[in-house]
Image (cartoon, rainbow over all chains, first blue to last red; front, side, top):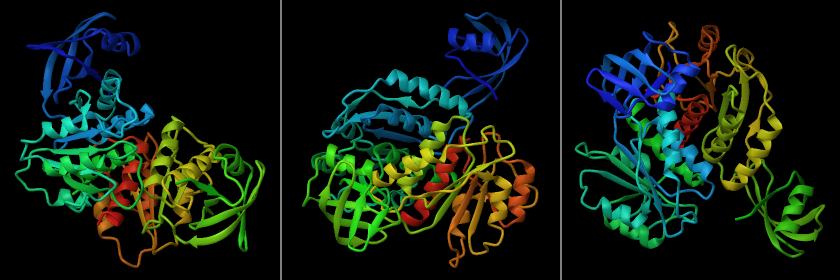
Length: 245
Length: 245
């Protein structure tokens, strides 16, 4: 199933931008009258018929809409420190989208070697992963921020399950497994945030700040996982607790 | 922690081959009398002291040994069809090793586009992933074989949990989630085999043959996963059912 993406949806019609039109008309050779499937990136799938097309712009009439198409049953935000090797981060972003994630926030920890990240590349990867895995909502990419800043930004979100995966024990609260933390999640809880540290792990101060702000310290089992594998392990854990019942 | 690998262990001494010696002596500049950690790839970690070294060969005296070092609590074989893009398969192999897998068998399905695979590259990736994730046993890579052949090769293994992940329902037996299949695993069961199909999925005949031979048909949840993501989802499921209690 071939999916196109449009940001330009108005009344009963939508337009494909230049890149999507080129693919639709030049590569796939669609013509006036052809039916195509278009996502709006916000969760809706539109069945449409092309009414006018060029390699520059394609206009299509909307025949039907399906909301929350390919949606998952949870709201998950992954706040993950960028890896030294950026391919590994991009790989995580693609896989997380396939499995099911709602937003990805690149966070910079005190021990992070990489302090910046090109989020425009991540958005491209997320668009194609969203289409490939037959979903209609594209995960959001948050602005890069410091780990401490991210922790503070969630301080007043009492009804959110906040988890921090660290490799050491903080004296104040012993770590539990992520599956245990998810199993014990209170039912009123809206959304899950998981904080994953850099290669050098979080600093003691970052972990203490998180735990003091209501984050539950979790571990991801006995294996020693790279940053991107740990992040994906968390996405799989949430997915399997919700979608694999 | 820096790990070296040796296949040449005799009595109280071991030798590093040329590649490992070069890394140990030229790159890390170890010298006679230095203590190093060496894995045998079969599950044991050796603490040793270098007694003679050159860039060609390094000999070390064994001071102590730890068996089943970094071992996981299950025996998992993943029989996975090669992906069109080989990087994706190599990525799976690296990640599966980090999380915990015992053997990987490249299997060729009727719908497989790729009919061959360079297993020597996989072995290199597995050696470095084993070291990186602090394990002493290197997962084995089986010879490439047809899916039907693989199914037949397990026909008499009654005490093994055999799972086939397919995207369609075979009339004979409805699919259950992989976590359900793992939860209901009989306790006497030695080892788990998971069969993952190619981009074009298994043929009806392959699925029927597997189910007829005692494979349980499983699904991996609602998301549409690529071959390598589906394979990793299965590794994570086994890992979290065993290691994340």
